Length: 438
Picture (cartoon, helix red, strand yellow):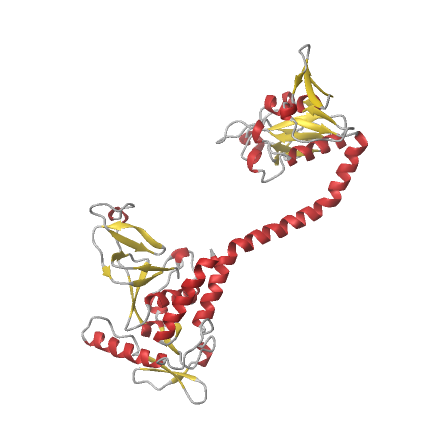
């Protein structure tokens, strides 16, 4: 048994008949003169030999009466007990020894059973055991744990832990003060966790706020000299009509959509040869006078990608697989031949990635999980990516176990369009701000 004592300001340990050995390098901190350092093996009585593990199958056949303890607390109940007094239990193995998601040391009370995954320790009093539990839960046990895949603190390693022992009455005062402070500590911990989550989410929240300001015309000033967005949309409609005539794209169902603002301030939509219909209830917010509302299907050509088997996609780019393959969340690999070319915003359209916006350029392959968006005329592709992200398209996904975004639904979403010149100013501002949000 080890005995510790101080001399000339240093700490010495004597074991049996051996000579005292200086252990100053092991002492983690100074303690009051009325306290003493002690090895764990000398501070407590180990009762591990009395533990008996019971298999799950055996426990299922027995009545559930008494608590059955494992490494992290009660894990079951059983029809018999091994101990009938307050004892200190300390987890012997498991990841909790290192990650400490729950207290590793705790007091078991009443009648109970303990398996071989928790050390069982007795002491001079319940107060003393509570103090030891408090200390064990406050220190890192990493120096006493062997193994990483299966961490374990055996009896020998545990026995070497140094514990500072205060006088009996001070132990009680320490526990009383901790009991008073614990609710405050837990409250602080909750607030600290919330602060850390907010810190982690803040850049993304700020970016989303900036995008919202951008698509509402509140991020940059309007220039009266800018050509209005209505003129841009007129050119896009003419370009679309020409492409439809040559059968390069399909005509929209129900006819081309045109949205205008009347003299009474209301918004009206005309489709094909039908009469204009008021859509005020669809307009989510006000936009500058130089801007215009339109449907996504009127501003862009949108087409779903094509299926390709996973066996034809390579994780790495090589001599044959040279073209990026876009799925719902960006590049998922490389393929032998592309099915699209150009600069395009890509919209994820299946599962948790619905509404995810990526950017493709050059020759690439788009799978059925992606919607390829083609910009007409002078519409800035960068602005298109930003605006599509700001629209939060996942809100239009089908509410099922496997959410999906139908192209027929996406094309009906309203989007506010700024003048072409203002699109460029918005992109320049966003690109300047983005590095500051990292």
